[in-house]
Length: 196
Length: 418
Image 1 (cartoon, each protein chain N blue to C red):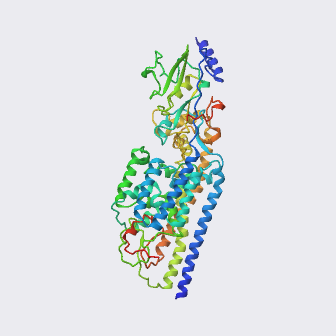
Image 2: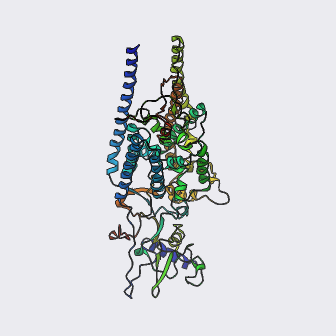
Image 3: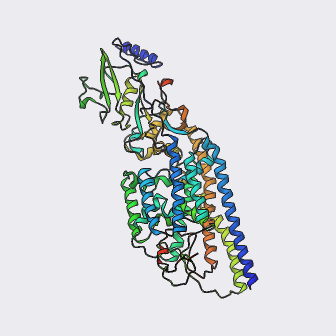
């Protein structure tokens, strides 16, 4: 009886040891297999602004409130128009900064007089909710210098971007850190200009 | 007038190749501001999370196994809720990292962040060495439920066993959807993340509130009956090198700890079973060796029958089906946004169909594996019910014990003095 019991214990121990070892090997191989991927360059979520249709879901689908998607202004592309399709509601009569004339629901797009007849437009990121109304207006009537993009300082870089899933035009993708920002009209020297 | 429009539109067409309106040259010497494109958060902050995780796991393992302090575990839970919960807003978390690892294994182009990989591996390693100390107070989802477990009631053993299968189904589904690049369902249907972020939708808020309210009486309902990472830890913990014990020395079978466990994870001493007849054992063995493969096959068959329904979650498959059936995403009176976007994307319908059918094919294989896995889980649960486990003392059930250390306070035995 005692020898049998002893034998039993060793069998159980054998299974235990074997499983411990195989779990260790399994974890090790997963970690080892994927470590090369983690070392390679970081990926970030970006909108392909050429595919973007400004459906407005960026404002609502992001897990962050307000959304990490903001409107970015590529000044190099801007025509500095007086009648800005991104700033004014269609059919606005007098081009004033009155709230009822503005397309932006949060007045995040600021208009500043530079010289006759040019006006500069600037986005207040604190106010921007990423709805894309101005982007749509600018794209329809202007140069398309206003573009929606994922602001990397705000983006949590989620595993699976919840906007990407809701995006109807597949404009969201993971891109290598070095290739962002995926926008038109950015100067090379402009990259990674951090506010801080 | 007509020609005028034609000329205008032609001109507009020409200019769009560059810019519709040229960039002005300022006479006033105005300097155009630069577009600010902020850089992502520094990597050092991500490494900090991993560091905090390791420190927290080491600390809680020490608190449970060496200090045997329930109070310590409680304060660790509070810290976890504050740091991993409210400060980190529940992201990155070990529970969701299962999906990152799966996606990285199946998708070549996905570079898994090192934090996600480490958040997957480190808690599993700690569990292999010390039991489920991660569940005790380092998981933000577990910690918030643990605090709410005021009046835990025992639930029937059979119900516990049946509900205990759900995590494996959830795990299988999460892996299936992550592997096909469809969705991360664990993150999407995380009931507590909404609390941590203060932005839950009404349904998710209600779900989280229900879990917490139910959790007052049935401790940690999410951990026990849903958590897919818990399913992995459950398996690993069975083989852990060390595990917490109820008593610091020798169990005296005083029964004081009997009802102390909120999770019903204490093995009671069982009387030695009468020896069964060999015939009965052989019969049962043969029966099981038939039933388990049948269950595995049946599971695969059933799941693969539903592979198209499972695939419908994938947005490309969904789009293809909406286009094919002309259902317009259930939107009436106007064209759905998805359809408009698809039309403007320039992709042909045939391309969409072939892409969608490739995904559906992946789902066919995936659902076979998923179904077989579920069948196997059912089969092994059945096997485990027939296996007699002898216990002479009160001891924690290593698989389901969350190492919360509540039972330790009930033990009257003093630790042996050296």
